[in-house]
Image 1 (cartoon, one colour):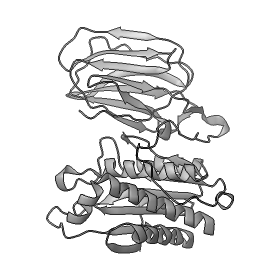
Image 2 (cartoon, helix red, strand yellow):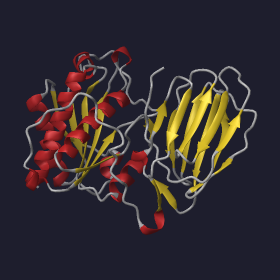
Image 3 (cartoon, rainbow, N blue to C red):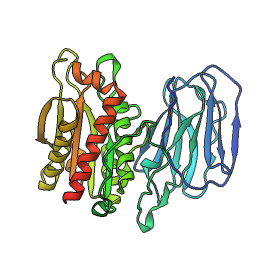
Image 4 (tube, rainbow, N blue to C red):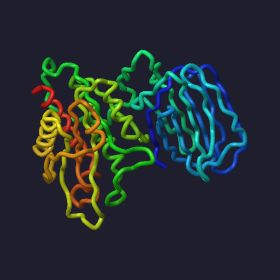
Length: 344
């Protein structure tokens, strides 16, 4: 099982509850809310691969445990400030679900959600201070919680006085139970673009920009929440990062595509990032295009969607599987964003 770290933040909790259960194969053994450490812990008898998502109307954090059966004790845990309750259920056969229901008047910044796998059967959800009272308006906090990857991208030092503190939202496509495109040798879009996006964010932060990410780990997030993160942050730039796909029978199709919706500013941003990639990354040019993708159509700031290559392409899949290529791609995207910021 892959060890995973996600980001989930919830605010202060008022009690510690332990529900201990007899052990059975692939059963949820216990779930515990520890207010002193501000975390929810859970353990199963067999190995699991949790899938986390944030659901709206009403807001709740849902943790699905595929292959885990329901516990004998299903009594909900009553939450504290900002949390109505935490309960367990079974949405379908073979899946146990933990639900953290958010109290009315509060909201969650998805980029702050954090879940950590301690081992194959033990997990904890760190309840970081991302739960906010919505009445006074929400400005999602910066998320330095997830450190940048150990490989450090290199860029020429920017001219900091010209960069300022503009807000950039980086949107890694897909995530959680939605892996996005599946390519050659099982290459998954969601994993690749998260790696690239985290490196882009690290470079931009080091260059003086205020960077928000729609997700910082393998969580499920619908399209509208991604838009709302950018709108609530009053972002100056929105960049959604994806990997393309066609058919596995068409490995000859490879290349970079960059999309904008309608605005001249969006087109300038798209062309700047696109050219920056072509100038430093070995990839075919499939052009800058106009499209109606939801996240670039519904955002009000200059917004682009970058397709970093085809996971179904013989050339692109080999490159995207290479960490060094992903590092170069991240550097090029960040360089294009910085160039656009300085020129606009």
